[in-house]
Amino acid sequence: MSTPTPAVRRPAAPTRLARWRRVSAAMLAAVALAVTACSAADPLAEQYRSGSGQGYISGDGSYTVIAPDERGQPITFSGLTETGETVSSNDYRGDVLVVNFWYAACPPCRAEAADLEAIWQQFQPDGVDFLGVNIYDQAPTALAFADEFGVTYPSILDANDGSTRLAFASQVAPNAVPTTLVLDREGRVAARITGLLSEPSTLRAMIADTLAESE
Image 1: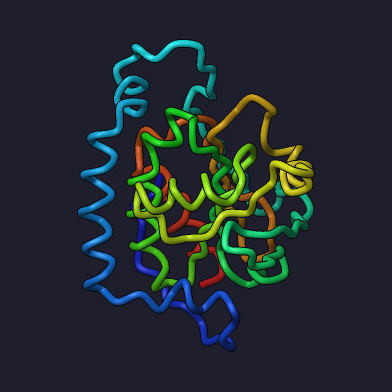
Image 2 (image 1 turned 180 degrees about the vertical axis):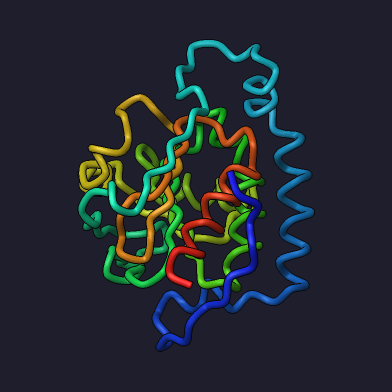
């Protein structure tokens, strides 16, 4: 994998998603500290890391990088977030988008929450968007998770109709939660991590490489 290099965001018109990007440096630093503390103290996450958790099957943490000329069609999706906002694939066209499939009681989802939030903080000045897809929970549970782990990016609630998961069905195996995808500026899947994000540097490199494609 190549070493992540700084990327410069090209000018773009403000969108309704801009509010997720207007977070002060001081607030981000405070969130990072809180997330680290919460993750370290979470029993389910610790059980998963230690291998003592029972009855949970996840992906093996393997990853795939797809060359630009081998990528499929752009993914089209829409849904409601935990705050009741409608988001769709059209909102993210032109940006690199990281999509994470998760749910609150999933031990590896809890274990990786701090790393995902830290990477989101790192790359949002470069115009990278993060979006969760919660496959089981309703809004109160999703909001409680975000509050506990300091997650500041939105998640689509997909438990009722599964339409967002269906849109990604060719990229996300049914039992592979968490799964993290990197979509290029055209909305095509450029990289995939199946299972726990055990090496945050891998996702950072994936994002940096996808950003660099259009420079």
